Length: 333
Ligand code: TYM
Image (cartoon, rainbow, N blue to C red; front, side, top):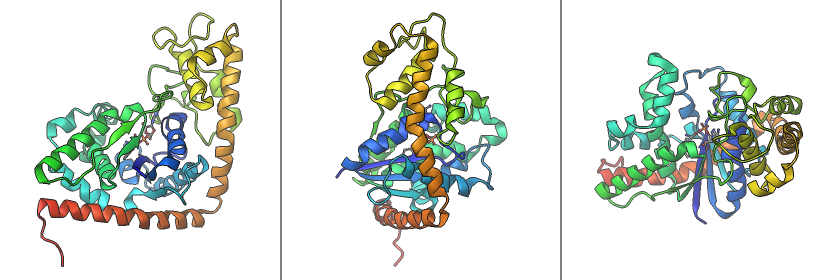
């Protein structure tokens, strides 16, 4: 089976709907056809200005529970914590030495975050984030990386680094491709449908959290900003609010935009939102319940993560060995 790799940061207690639609829905759909590796990228989470050492371990465990509750099977796929596999940081160092300062400076996510985090929050770690991400992917001879479309530039950098390394040191890396969902590649904030749904939003009102109570989710969707006019039509320029809700609806139900528009033809925004809320709740409620159940037994989660980390370490160590050989490092005998 071809190799698949993706990761999510444990940067809050709950995932939001953007992560769920952009990442987890794809993971669940794809894992059967791939030898899949999914990571909880805690080393990446250290680069967030708001990161809190007191909640990181719980967030990692919580993310493991949400992965499993959303349908990632830790018996079939390898679900593990990034820091449990030391080769990630080791390969990132080697890749640092072939990454241009200029090309890393051009990463738009770095530019956005450094603006938000300010001078103190803009660390070398934040700058290096995409190189560590490239290391994650390249360690596993990955062919396909399912992510939301905000990660396109990082995937391009990963491909460039793989090709550059191979050209300079010999064919060591598989050059991966990104895979972006057709619907829901990008979910926007419900209160500000021109910015993507993100943990760093100014208010919580525009974010749907996977672990929110259904009543909270319903309220947030009913209060989502809509647009002038009364028609439910897919059009990002004139109707970003409505279009975002349609995007969420089609991603979750699997229906096409045309079918969804037909369903809502002649209906008001109130009815439309109610139906979207029903669909989101029907999807998330069982995930929330299962995640909370799993979290009631943290020792079992930790045991699963340890087993999976052992599997990940085997693959990762073999790749790192090839890399060290290729760059001519004196082997430790
Ligand atoms: P993170 O945790 O920020 O996001 C996890 C996944 O959620 C997607 N996503 C979205 N999709 C649609 N709409 C949104 N509003 C939205 N917000 C987030 C992201 O595209 C991502 O797929 N850098 C990665 C983490 C990572 C990684 C990797 C991914 C580290 N190493 C290796 C793949 C392979 C990230 O964005 O995490």
